[in-house]
Length: 483
Ligand SMILES: Cc1ncc(COP(=O)(O)O)c(C=O)c1O
Image (cartoon, rainbow, N blue to C red; front, side, top):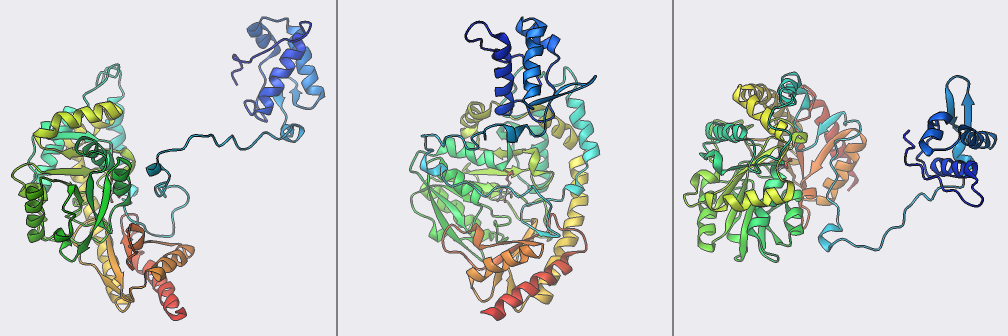
Protein backbone atom coordinates (compact mmCIF):
# COMPACT_ATOMS: atom_id res chain seq x y z
CA UNK A 1 0.00 0.00 0.00
CA UNK A 2 1.39 3.30 -0.98
CA UNK A 3 0.82 5.81 1.77
CA UNK A 4 2.98 8.52 0.28
CA UNK A 5 -0.03 10.78 0.08
CA UNK A 6 -1.05 10.19 3.69
CA UNK A 7 -2.28 13.58 4.86
CA UNK A 8 -0.87 13.94 8.38
CA UNK A 9 -2.36 16.98 9.97
CA UNK A 10 -0.88 18.20 13.18
CA UNK A 11 -3.22 19.92 15.54
CA UNK A 12 -2.74 21.51 18.92
CA UNK A 13 0.74 21.56 20.31
CA UNK A 14 2.56 19.73 17.60
CA UNK A 15 1.32 16.28 18.59
CA UNK A 16 2.73 14.42 15.61
CA UNK A 17 1.96 11.00 17.05
CA UNK A 18 -1.73 11.88 17.25
CA UNK A 19 -1.57 13.20 13.67
CA UNK A 20 -0.10 9.94 12.33
CA UNK A 21 -2.54 7.91 14.42
CA UNK A 22 -5.54 9.82 13.06
CA UNK A 23 -4.35 9.66 9.47
CA UNK A 24 -3.86 5.88 9.58
CA UNK A 25 -7.12 5.33 11.42
CA UNK A 26 -8.91 7.38 8.75
CA UNK A 27 -7.26 5.33 6.01
CA UNK A 28 -8.50 2.15 7.70
CA UNK A 29 -11.97 3.62 8.22
CA UNK A 30 -12.48 4.68 4.61
CA UNK A 31 -11.09 1.48 3.17
CA UNK A 32 -7.85 2.75 1.69
CA UNK A 33 -6.25 0.29 4.10
CA UNK A 34 -8.01 -3.07 4.05
CA UNK A 35 -7.87 -5.91 6.61
CA UNK A 36 -4.65 -7.82 5.97
CA UNK A 37 -2.79 -4.85 4.43
CA UNK A 38 0.65 -4.19 5.82
CA UNK A 39 1.50 -0.80 7.23
CA UNK A 40 4.77 0.65 5.97
CA UNK A 41 7.73 0.02 8.29
CA UNK A 42 7.94 2.77 10.89
CA UNK A 43 11.34 3.80 9.68
CA UNK A 44 10.14 4.31 6.11
CA UNK A 45 6.99 6.19 7.06
CA UNK A 46 9.01 8.38 9.42
CA UNK A 47 11.39 9.26 6.60
CA UNK A 48 8.54 9.99 4.21
CA UNK A 49 6.79 12.22 6.73
CA UNK A 50 10.03 13.75 7.94
CA UNK A 51 9.34 12.73 11.55
CA UNK A 52 11.27 10.90 14.22
CA UNK A 53 10.88 7.14 14.06
CA UNK A 54 9.69 7.04 17.69
CA UNK A 55 6.84 9.39 16.87
CA UNK A 56 5.54 7.00 14.23
CA UNK A 57 6.19 3.93 16.40
CA UNK A 58 4.11 5.50 19.18
CA UNK A 59 1.22 5.95 16.73
CA UNK A 60 1.52 2.28 15.72
CA UNK A 61 1.50 1.29 19.40
CA UNK A 62 -1.70 3.17 19.97
CA UNK A 63 -3.35 1.57 16.91
CA UNK A 64 -2.19 -1.83 18.16
CA UNK A 65 -3.53 -1.21 21.66
CA UNK A 66 -6.91 -0.28 20.20
CA UNK A 67 -7.00 -3.41 18.04
CA UNK A 68 -6.82 -1.75 14.60
CA UNK A 69 -3.51 -3.35 13.72
CA UNK A 70 -1.45 -6.31 14.91
CA UNK A 71 2.30 -6.70 14.84
CA UNK A 72 3.69 -9.98 13.61
CA UNK A 73 7.27 -10.62 14.63
CA UNK A 74 9.61 -10.30 11.71
CA UNK A 75 6.78 -9.67 9.24
CA UNK A 76 5.48 -6.21 10.04
CA UNK A 77 2.31 -4.53 11.22
CA UNK A 78 -0.99 -5.52 9.62
CA UNK A 79 -4.52 -4.17 9.65
CA UNK A 80 -6.57 -6.64 11.68
CA UNK A 81 -9.32 -8.72 10.13
CA UNK A 82 -11.91 -7.65 12.71
CA UNK A 83 -11.21 -3.99 12.16
CA UNK A 84 -14.49 -3.22 10.38
CA UNK A 85 -16.65 -4.01 13.40
CA UNK A 86 -14.49 -1.77 15.56
CA UNK A 87 -15.18 1.24 13.39
CA UNK A 88 -18.30 3.29 12.87
CA UNK A 89 -20.07 1.97 9.77
CA UNK A 90 -18.84 3.67 6.63
CA UNK A 91 -21.70 5.29 4.74
CA UNK A 92 -22.39 2.63 2.12
CA UNK A 93 -24.16 4.85 -0.35
CA UNK A 94 -22.73 8.06 -1.66
CA UNK A 95 -25.05 10.95 -2.15
CA UNK A 96 -27.15 10.36 -5.25
CA UNK A 97 -26.15 13.70 -6.66
CA UNK A 98 -28.36 16.38 -8.07
CA UNK A 99 -27.59 15.99 -11.77
CA UNK A 100 -29.91 14.15 -14.15
CA UNK A 101 -28.96 12.77 -17.57
CA UNK A 102 -30.87 13.74 -20.71
CA UNK A 103 -34.07 11.79 -21.09
CA UNK A 104 -32.68 9.40 -23.69
CA UNK A 105 -30.14 8.19 -21.15
CA UNK A 106 -32.56 7.33 -18.37
CA UNK A 107 -33.29 3.83 -19.69
CA UNK A 108 -30.33 1.50 -19.59
CA UNK A 109 -29.71 -0.88 -22.48
CA UNK A 110 -29.88 -4.56 -21.66
CA UNK A 111 -26.57 -5.49 -20.04
CA UNK A 112 -24.37 -7.99 -21.86
CA UNK A 113 -24.86 -11.42 -20.38
CA UNK A 114 -21.32 -12.60 -20.84
CA UNK A 115 -20.60 -12.91 -17.12
CA UNK A 116 -21.50 -15.77 -14.81
CA UNK A 117 -21.67 -19.42 -15.68
CA UNK A 118 -23.16 -20.03 -19.09
CA UNK A 119 -26.42 -21.97 -19.11
CA UNK A 120 -26.21 -25.68 -19.89
CA UNK A 121 -28.15 -25.20 -23.10
CA UNK A 122 -27.09 -21.89 -24.51
CA UNK A 123 -29.39 -20.74 -27.33
CA UNK A 124 -28.63 -17.08 -26.73
CA UNK A 125 -28.47 -14.86 -29.76
CA UNK A 126 -25.38 -13.12 -31.03
CA UNK A 127 -22.78 -15.21 -29.22
CA UNK A 128 -20.15 -16.86 -31.40
CA UNK A 129 -18.25 -19.87 -30.10
CA UNK A 130 -15.06 -18.55 -28.50
CA UNK A 131 -13.84 -22.15 -28.44
CA UNK A 132 -13.44 -21.99 -32.22
CA UNK A 133 -11.31 -18.88 -32.10
CA UNK A 134 -7.61 -19.53 -32.90
CA UNK A 135 -6.24 -17.88 -29.77
CA UNK A 136 -2.73 -19.26 -30.16
CA UNK A 137 -2.32 -17.80 -33.62
CA UNK A 138 -4.00 -14.54 -32.71
CA UNK A 139 -1.76 -14.08 -29.69
CA UNK A 140 1.31 -14.23 -31.90
CA UNK A 141 -0.02 -11.50 -34.18
CA UNK A 142 -0.92 -9.25 -31.27
CA UNK A 143 2.42 -9.90 -29.54
CA UNK A 144 4.18 -8.97 -32.73
CA UNK A 145 2.47 -5.58 -32.67
CA UNK A 146 3.53 -4.96 -29.08
CA UNK A 147 7.23 -4.78 -29.93
CA UNK A 148 8.88 -1.42 -29.37
CA UNK A 149 8.67 0.49 -32.59
CA UNK A 150 5.79 -1.45 -34.12
CA UNK A 151 3.16 0.95 -35.43
CA UNK A 152 4.75 4.06 -33.94
CA UNK A 153 3.10 3.66 -30.53
CA UNK A 154 4.22 7.08 -29.33
CA UNK A 155 1.90 8.99 -31.63
CA UNK A 156 -1.71 9.07 -32.71
CA UNK A 157 -2.77 7.12 -35.79
CA UNK A 158 -5.16 7.71 -38.67
CA UNK A 159 -8.84 7.81 -37.68
CA UNK A 160 -9.78 5.80 -40.79
CA UNK A 161 -7.90 2.79 -39.49
CA UNK A 162 -4.71 0.89 -40.21
CA UNK A 163 -4.00 0.90 -43.98
CA UNK A 164 -3.28 -2.81 -44.23
CA UNK A 165 -6.45 -3.68 -42.36
CA UNK A 166 -8.53 -1.48 -44.66
CA UNK A 167 -6.93 -3.10 -47.65
CA UNK A 168 -7.67 -6.57 -46.26
CA UNK A 169 -11.26 -5.65 -45.45
CA UNK A 170 -11.69 -4.44 -49.03
CA UNK A 171 -10.45 -7.80 -50.32
CA UNK A 172 -12.51 -9.72 -47.79
CA UNK A 173 -15.83 -8.11 -48.69
CA UNK A 174 -15.06 -8.24 -52.40
CA UNK A 175 -14.45 -11.98 -52.23
CA UNK A 176 -17.17 -12.90 -49.76
CA UNK A 177 -19.90 -10.36 -50.43
CA UNK A 178 -19.17 -8.94 -53.88
CA UNK A 179 -18.96 -5.49 -52.28
CA UNK A 180 -16.34 -3.54 -54.18
CA UNK A 181 -14.79 -0.74 -52.21
CA UNK A 182 -11.62 1.26 -52.38
CA UNK A 183 -9.71 0.94 -49.07
CA UNK A 184 -10.13 4.72 -48.86
CA UNK A 185 -13.91 4.20 -48.63
CA UNK A 186 -13.49 2.00 -45.57
CA UNK A 187 -13.52 3.34 -42.05
CA UNK A 188 -12.53 0.93 -39.29
CA UNK A 189 -14.74 1.29 -36.22
CA UNK A 190 -15.14 -0.13 -32.75
CA UNK A 191 -17.73 -2.66 -33.86
CA UNK A 192 -20.84 -2.14 -35.97
CA UNK A 193 -22.25 -0.08 -33.13
CA UNK A 194 -19.72 2.70 -33.58
CA UNK A 195 -20.23 2.64 -37.32
CA UNK A 196 -23.93 3.40 -36.80
CA UNK A 197 -23.06 6.04 -34.21
CA UNK A 198 -20.73 7.88 -36.58
CA UNK A 199 -23.17 7.65 -39.48
CA UNK A 200 -25.91 9.07 -37.25
CA UNK A 201 -23.68 11.92 -36.16
CA UNK A 202 -22.78 12.99 -39.66
CA UNK A 203 -26.20 12.53 -41.28
CA UNK A 204 -28.83 13.41 -38.69
CA UNK A 205 -30.11 16.62 -37.24
CA UNK A 206 -32.01 16.44 -33.93
CA UNK A 207 -35.60 15.47 -34.61
CA UNK A 208 -34.86 13.76 -37.93
CA UNK A 209 -36.93 10.66 -38.58
CA UNK A 210 -35.06 7.36 -38.75
CA UNK A 211 -36.73 4.09 -39.73
CA UNK A 212 -35.68 0.83 -38.11
CA UNK A 213 -37.00 -2.68 -38.44
CA UNK A 214 -39.65 -3.93 -36.00
CA UNK A 215 -38.78 -6.31 -34.46
CA UNK A 216 -35.21 -5.12 -34.62
CA UNK A 217 -31.86 -4.68 -32.98
CA UNK A 218 -32.36 -2.68 -29.75
CA UNK A 219 -28.83 -1.26 -29.36
CA UNK A 220 -29.11 0.55 -32.69
CA UNK A 221 -32.64 1.77 -32.02
CA UNK A 222 -31.57 3.15 -28.65
CA UNK A 223 -28.38 4.65 -30.02
CA UNK A 224 -30.18 6.55 -32.77
CA UNK A 225 -32.76 7.82 -30.27
CA UNK A 226 -29.94 9.03 -28.03
CA UNK A 227 -28.64 11.10 -30.94
CA UNK A 228 -31.95 12.95 -30.93
CA UNK A 229 -33.55 11.13 -33.86
CA UNK A 230 -37.24 10.24 -33.94
CA UNK A 231 -37.00 6.49 -34.38
CA UNK A 232 -39.94 4.81 -36.10
CA UNK A 233 -40.39 1.03 -36.26
CA UNK A 234 -41.32 -0.42 -39.64
CA UNK A 235 -42.79 -3.93 -39.92
CA UNK A 236 -41.01 -6.87 -41.47
CA UNK A 237 -42.89 -9.53 -43.42
CA UNK A 238 -41.81 -12.70 -45.22
CA UNK A 239 -40.05 -10.57 -47.88
CA UNK A 240 -38.20 -8.38 -45.39
CA UNK A 241 -38.68 -4.74 -44.42
CA UNK A 242 -42.06 -3.49 -45.67
CA UNK A 243 -40.95 -0.61 -47.85
CA UNK A 244 -44.49 0.72 -48.28
CA UNK A 245 -44.70 1.30 -44.54
CA UNK A 246 -41.61 3.52 -44.38
CA UNK A 247 -42.41 6.95 -42.97
CA UNK A 248 -42.26 9.48 -45.80
CA UNK A 249 -40.04 11.79 -43.77
CA UNK A 250 -37.33 9.23 -42.96
CA UNK A 251 -33.82 10.60 -43.54
CA UNK A 252 -32.20 7.29 -42.74
CA UNK A 253 -33.27 3.64 -42.86
CA UNK A 254 -31.43 1.00 -40.81
CA UNK A 255 -31.89 -2.53 -42.12
CA UNK A 256 -30.41 -6.06 -41.89
CA UNK A 257 -31.27 -7.44 -45.35
CA UNK A 258 -29.14 -10.60 -45.42
CA UNK A 259 -30.48 -12.04 -42.18
CA UNK A 260 -33.08 -9.82 -40.58
CA UNK A 261 -32.38 -9.31 -36.92
CA UNK A 262 -33.94 -11.18 -35.13
CA UNK A 263 -36.33 -12.99 -37.49
CA UNK A 264 -33.71 -14.16 -39.97
CA UNK A 265 -35.75 -13.44 -43.09
CA UNK A 266 -33.63 -12.43 -46.08
CA UNK A 267 -34.93 -9.39 -47.94
CA UNK A 268 -36.11 -10.37 -51.41
CA UNK A 269 -34.52 -8.83 -54.47
CA UNK A 270 -37.79 -7.05 -55.29
CA UNK A 271 -37.82 -5.45 -51.85
CA UNK A 272 -34.18 -4.46 -52.11
CA UNK A 273 -34.85 -2.74 -55.39
CA UNK A 274 -37.96 -1.08 -53.96
CA UNK A 275 -36.04 0.14 -50.92
CA UNK A 276 -33.33 1.71 -53.06
CA UNK A 277 -35.91 3.34 -55.32
CA UNK A 278 -37.68 4.66 -52.24
CA UNK A 279 -34.43 6.07 -50.83
CA UNK A 280 -33.65 7.68 -54.17
CA UNK A 281 -37.08 9.29 -54.40
CA UNK A 282 -36.89 10.63 -50.80
CA UNK A 283 -33.23 11.58 -50.79
CA UNK A 284 -32.68 9.23 -47.86
CA UNK A 285 -29.69 7.15 -46.75
CA UNK A 286 -29.69 3.45 -45.97
CA UNK A 287 -27.55 1.61 -43.44
CA UNK A 288 -27.09 -2.01 -44.45
CA UNK A 289 -25.98 -3.93 -41.35
CA UNK A 290 -24.46 -7.15 -42.69
CA UNK A 291 -23.61 -8.40 -39.21
CA UNK A 292 -23.50 -12.18 -39.67
CA UNK A 293 -23.90 -13.06 -43.33
CA UNK A 294 -20.40 -14.57 -43.55
CA UNK A 295 -22.20 -17.63 -42.23
CA UNK A 296 -24.33 -18.49 -45.24
CA UNK A 297 -25.90 -21.90 -45.49
CA UNK A 298 -27.52 -21.95 -48.91
CA UNK A 299 -26.07 -21.86 -52.38
CA UNK A 300 -28.03 -18.79 -53.34
CA UNK A 301 -25.87 -15.75 -52.72
CA UNK A 302 -27.57 -12.92 -50.89
CA UNK A 303 -26.59 -9.91 -52.86
CA UNK A 304 -25.97 -6.95 -50.56
CA UNK A 305 -27.98 -3.78 -51.09
CA UNK A 306 -24.67 -2.01 -51.53
CA UNK A 307 -24.09 -3.90 -54.78
CA UNK A 308 -27.41 -2.71 -56.19
CA UNK A 309 -26.80 0.94 -55.33
CA UNK A 310 -25.25 2.89 -58.20
CA UNK A 311 -25.45 6.34 -56.63
CA UNK A 312 -24.00 6.00 -53.14
CA UNK A 313 -26.97 5.99 -50.76
CA UNK A 314 -26.08 2.78 -48.98
CA UNK A 315 -23.63 2.62 -46.09
CA UNK A 316 -22.46 -0.96 -45.76
CA UNK A 317 -21.64 -1.90 -42.14
CA UNK A 318 -19.72 -5.02 -41.17
CA UNK A 319 -18.33 -6.45 -37.96
CA UNK A 320 -15.83 -9.04 -36.77
CA UNK A 321 -18.02 -9.71 -33.72
CA UNK A 322 -19.33 -12.96 -35.20
CA UNK A 323 -16.50 -13.97 -37.49
CA UNK A 324 -13.95 -13.52 -34.69
CA UNK A 325 -15.04 -12.25 -31.27
CA UNK A 326 -17.39 -9.48 -30.08
CA UNK A 327 -14.85 -8.39 -27.45
CA UNK A 328 -12.25 -7.48 -30.09
CA UNK A 329 -14.48 -4.51 -30.96
CA UNK A 330 -13.60 -4.29 -34.62
CA UNK A 331 -16.10 -3.38 -37.28
CA UNK A 332 -16.16 -1.13 -40.32
CA UNK A 333 -18.28 0.93 -42.63
CA UNK A 334 -18.01 1.27 -46.37
CA UNK A 335 -19.21 4.77 -47.14
CA UNK A 336 -19.60 6.74 -50.35
CA UNK A 337 -16.75 9.21 -50.99
CA UNK A 338 -19.16 12.09 -50.31
CA UNK A 339 -19.18 11.13 -46.60
CA UNK A 340 -15.53 10.13 -46.31
CA UNK A 341 -14.10 13.16 -44.63
CA UNK A 342 -17.13 13.76 -42.38
CA UNK A 343 -16.98 10.20 -41.07
CA UNK A 344 -13.26 10.38 -40.46
CA UNK A 345 -13.73 13.67 -38.63
CA UNK A 346 -16.52 12.19 -36.51
CA UNK A 347 -14.34 9.23 -35.62
CA UNK A 348 -11.41 11.45 -34.78
CA UNK A 349 -13.48 13.70 -32.55
CA UNK A 350 -15.09 10.82 -30.68
CA UNK A 351 -12.23 8.36 -30.14
CA UNK A 352 -9.26 9.61 -32.23
CA UNK A 353 -8.81 6.11 -33.59
CA UNK A 354 -9.31 2.48 -32.65
CA UNK A 355 -6.39 0.65 -30.97
CA UNK A 356 -3.68 0.35 -33.61
CA UNK A 357 -2.15 -2.86 -32.32
CA UNK A 358 -5.43 -4.74 -32.74
CA UNK A 359 -6.00 -3.21 -36.16
CA UNK A 360 -2.51 -4.05 -37.36
CA UNK A 361 -2.66 -7.56 -35.91
CA UNK A 362 -5.95 -8.21 -37.66
CA UNK A 363 -4.66 -6.83 -40.95
CA UNK A 364 -1.68 -9.20 -40.87
CA UNK A 365 -3.83 -12.10 -39.64
CA UNK A 366 -6.14 -11.62 -42.62
CA UNK A 367 -3.29 -11.14 -45.07
CA UNK A 368 -1.86 -14.49 -43.98
CA UNK A 369 -5.16 -16.19 -44.73
CA UNK A 370 -5.94 -17.03 -41.12
CA UNK A 371 -9.35 -15.37 -41.01
CA UNK A 372 -10.39 -17.32 -44.09
CA UNK A 373 -9.14 -20.54 -42.52
CA UNK A 374 -10.94 -19.85 -39.25
CA UNK A 375 -14.14 -19.05 -41.14
CA UNK A 376 -14.04 -22.34 -43.01
CA UNK A 377 -13.85 -24.25 -39.72
CA UNK A 378 -16.45 -22.05 -38.00
CA UNK A 379 -18.87 -22.41 -40.91
CA UNK A 380 -18.64 -26.19 -40.71
CA UNK A 381 -19.34 -26.15 -36.97
CA UNK A 382 -22.23 -23.71 -37.21
CA UNK A 383 -23.74 -25.51 -40.19
CA UNK A 384 -23.92 -28.70 -38.11
CA UNK A 385 -25.40 -26.98 -35.10
CA UNK A 386 -27.89 -25.12 -37.23
CA UNK A 387 -29.00 -28.33 -38.90
CA UNK A 388 -29.46 -29.93 -35.47
CA UNK A 389 -31.55 -27.02 -34.21
CA UNK A 390 -33.70 -26.85 -37.33
CA UNK A 391 -34.20 -30.62 -37.30
CA UNK A 392 -35.27 -30.64 -33.66
CA UNK A 393 -37.53 -27.65 -34.14
CA UNK A 394 -39.29 -29.17 -37.11
CA UNK A 395 -39.45 -32.68 -35.70
CA UNK A 396 -40.49 -31.98 -32.14
CA UNK A 397 -41.93 -28.52 -31.97
CA UNK A 398 -43.67 -28.02 -35.30
CA UNK A 399 -47.11 -28.37 -33.73
CA UNK A 400 -46.47 -25.27 -31.62
CA UNK A 401 -43.78 -23.34 -33.46
CA UNK A 402 -43.48 -22.18 -37.04
CA UNK A 403 -39.90 -21.81 -38.20
CA UNK A 404 -39.09 -18.54 -39.97
CA UNK A 405 -37.18 -19.42 -43.16
CA UNK A 406 -33.63 -18.09 -43.28
CA UNK A 407 -30.32 -19.15 -44.76
CA UNK A 408 -27.56 -17.34 -42.91
CA UNK A 409 -26.27 -16.23 -39.56
CA UNK A 410 -25.98 -17.67 -36.10
CA UNK A 411 -29.63 -17.94 -35.10
CA UNK A 412 -33.05 -19.03 -36.32
CA UNK A 413 -36.38 -17.85 -35.05
CA UNK A 414 -39.77 -19.44 -34.77
CA UNK A 415 -43.19 -17.94 -34.23
CA UNK A 416 -45.45 -19.34 -31.55
CA UNK A 417 -48.52 -20.56 -33.42
CA UNK A 418 -50.88 -19.58 -30.60
CA UNK A 419 -49.73 -15.95 -31.01
CA UNK A 420 -49.59 -15.50 -27.26
CA UNK A 421 -46.62 -13.21 -26.62
CA UNK A 422 -47.03 -13.24 -22.85
CA UNK A 423 -46.81 -16.99 -22.88
CA UNK A 424 -43.60 -16.82 -24.91
CA UNK A 425 -42.01 -14.61 -22.25
CA UNK A 426 -43.17 -16.93 -19.47
CA UNK A 427 -41.83 -19.97 -21.32
CA UNK A 428 -38.42 -18.36 -21.83
CA UNK A 429 -38.27 -17.48 -18.13
CA UNK A 430 -39.27 -21.01 -17.09
CA UNK A 431 -36.78 -22.52 -19.55
CA UNK A 432 -34.01 -20.33 -18.10
CA UNK A 433 -34.71 -21.89 -14.70
CA UNK A 434 -34.03 -25.26 -16.28
CA UNK A 435 -30.77 -23.95 -17.71
CA UNK A 436 -32.09 -23.52 -21.25
CA UNK A 437 -31.39 -19.94 -22.36
CA UNK A 438 -33.61 -18.77 -25.23
CA UNK A 439 -34.42 -15.26 -26.43
CA UNK A 440 -37.95 -14.24 -27.38
CA UNK A 441 -38.95 -12.26 -30.44
CA UNK A 442 -40.86 -10.03 -28.03
CA UNK A 443 -37.67 -8.80 -26.40
CA UNK A 444 -36.66 -7.28 -29.73
CA UNK A 445 -39.96 -5.44 -30.19
CA UNK A 446 -40.30 -1.75 -29.37
CA UNK A 447 -44.05 -1.90 -30.01
CA UNK A 448 -46.46 -4.71 -29.06
CA UNK A 449 -44.55 -7.93 -28.43
CA UNK A 450 -44.71 -10.57 -31.15
CA UNK A 451 -44.98 -14.18 -30.03
CA UNK A 452 -42.01 -16.38 -30.72
CA UNK A 453 -38.48 -17.41 -29.89
CA UNK A 454 -35.01 -16.89 -31.26
CA UNK A 455 -32.61 -19.80 -31.07
CA UNK A 456 -28.93 -18.93 -31.33
CA UNK A 457 -26.54 -21.78 -32.07
CA UNK A 458 -23.24 -19.90 -31.93
CA UNK A 459 -22.52 -20.84 -28.32
CA UNK A 460 -24.37 -24.15 -28.35
CA UNK A 461 -22.27 -27.16 -27.49
CA UNK A 462 -21.98 -29.65 -30.33
CA UNK A 463 -24.48 -32.46 -30.25
CA UNK A 464 -26.66 -30.94 -27.52
CA UNK A 465 -29.32 -29.17 -29.58
CA UNK A 466 -31.78 -32.01 -29.40
CA UNK A 467 -31.54 -32.47 -25.65
CA UNK A 468 -31.85 -28.72 -25.06
CA UNK A 469 -34.87 -28.43 -27.31
CA UNK A 470 -36.51 -31.48 -25.73
CA UNK A 471 -36.24 -29.74 -22.38
CA UNK A 472 -37.57 -26.59 -23.98
CA UNK A 473 -40.52 -28.51 -25.44
CA UNK A 474 -41.42 -29.84 -21.99
CA UNK A 475 -41.62 -26.30 -20.62
CA UNK A 476 -43.58 -25.12 -23.64
CA UNK A 477 -46.09 -27.97 -23.51
CA UNK A 478 -46.58 -27.54 -19.79
CA UNK A 479 -47.27 -23.83 -20.24
CA UNK A 480 -49.84 -24.64 -22.93
CA UNK A 481 -51.70 -26.98 -20.60
CA UNK A 482 -51.86 -24.40 -17.86
CA UNK A 483 -53.75 -21.96 -20.08
C1 LIG B 1 -28.02 -6.70 -35.87
C2 LIG B 1 -26.65 -6.67 -35.28
N1 LIG B 1 -25.78 -5.77 -35.71
C3 LIG B 1 -24.53 -5.72 -35.21
C4 LIG B 1 -24.12 -6.59 -34.23
C5 LIG B 1 -22.71 -6.53 -33.72
O1 LIG B 1 -22.40 -5.30 -33.26
P1 LIG B 1 -20.90 -4.95 -32.82
O2 LIG B 1 -20.02 -5.11 -33.99
O3 LIG B 1 -21.02 -3.55 -32.36
O4 LIG B 1 -20.55 -5.89 -31.71
C6 LIG B 1 -25.01 -7.53 -33.73
C7 LIG B 1 -24.59 -8.42 -32.64
O5 LIG B 1 -25.35 -9.09 -32.01
C8 LIG B 1 -26.30 -7.57 -34.27
O6 LIG B 1 -27.17 -8.47 -33.85
